[in-house]
Amino acid sequence: MPEACMAVAGKGNAERELLYHTDYVDVFYDKPNHLLLVCWRRSVKSHEYRDGIEEIGRHLLRLDVEKLLVNNQRMGVLTMDDQGWLAKISIEVISKSHLKYLAIVSSTDALQQMTNEVLDKRVKVETPPFITQYFLSEEDALEWLVAA
Image (cartoon, rainbow, N blue to C red):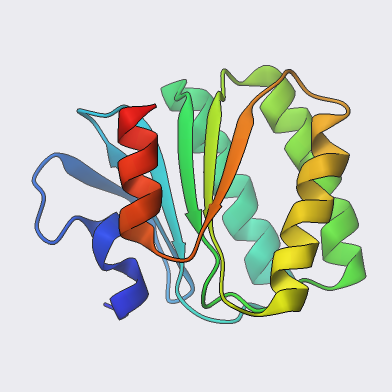
């Protein structure tokens, strides 16, 4: 498993259930903390990204979680088309969810960080309020979510 996914995977944590796995994304459910953990494992093609996001949305709604951690460190930067699609689908899913806290683990790539922040602002205009925090490490993000 890529090093960037170790905190999400839980290093053998029996309380974490792997819900979805591909060579490009892993989605876990942390039962005790009632949160969804997502780790993008590599740069993705548009169709891979969209498939992954749709799967994440289904689990977010099905499990009715309030906390979401997304590790984008290895994902790369989204195309403009994918950014527009993500904003639309995020508004739909988040509006139906009970999401309260979103932790995003970003790479040090300034373009990726800027894209995340622009999308976050765009989505928040049309959804119920939720708090987004940005991190450079999974451990910090997880600690913040568990304490929230």
